[in-house]
Picture 1: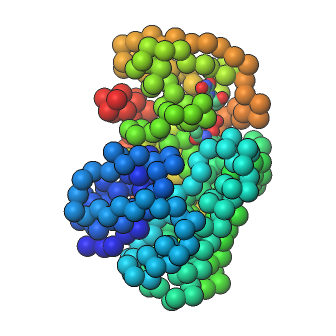
Picture 2 (picture 1 turned 45 degrees about the vertical axis):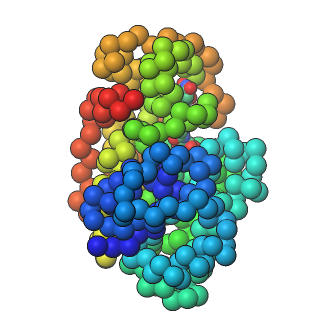
Length: 309
Ligand code: UD1
């Protein structure tokens, strides 16, 4: 049994990760300010301890890290909305970057004996780079405060490994989807918005011609990747793409979803979004070499998502 910290553990990815850790017999401490996450995402379990706190509460975080002696730390807490980072660059920076560096610094200063620290970055850092598929060593071009913070923090995380010997790893998420994805904002993941529109028989706004492609990766495959990277001791000071390694167009996804749900999606077509990228998918060779094996193709993933709604 390990003691694990999941920041952002009440969110979409964090709560699915917490489920899996609990299943594995771990004790999980969740820190989440519930700005995006929701408490109902967390199962009632004696193995879960929940703190409604922001990771920017430094006094709290310091005490927690020193007192709990975590084996593994997953840094998932973030303002995940790119649009929000554009509207409030400094506020989101304090959360997306500074608070994570404070955690690393506390571990370093107090010589805390953590087995692995994993930070979640984003494919957003590749920005305008059109090279496909995206490889970990492809050029990056972070174009928004969100992407800049993700990239810089990823570098800090790796450097805390190189400079101070902390066992660190970072992942770059592609388009993660699945149960508990929050469709709250117009900038939520497109599959959560399509799910919501199908479920409530409301309209979905399609930006562009629908031929844009994405690497949609099902949440359970993402969790597989996260656990694999933390449990392999030798994997440290490295960054990995986490995707499915496949791409599919929005129109194809919509067609598949319509047939699974037996519903026709109402669509309003609008011009493509400013700055939208046409195609994106991940080269996942690096993580596959470690044993990552994504199991959910888009149809299977969508079926499970639909069932969960
Ligand atoms: C994703 C990330 C974003 C990151 C980018 C970089 C999410 C939610 N966003 O954006 O943080 O900067 O990767 O790789 O994961 N669409 C519609 N209608 C809608 C919403 C979206 O047609 O109501 C379209 C978008 O214009 C886009 C596609 O669907 O072409 C996917 O959109 P979205 O889910 O927001 O993801 P990304 O644009 O890939």
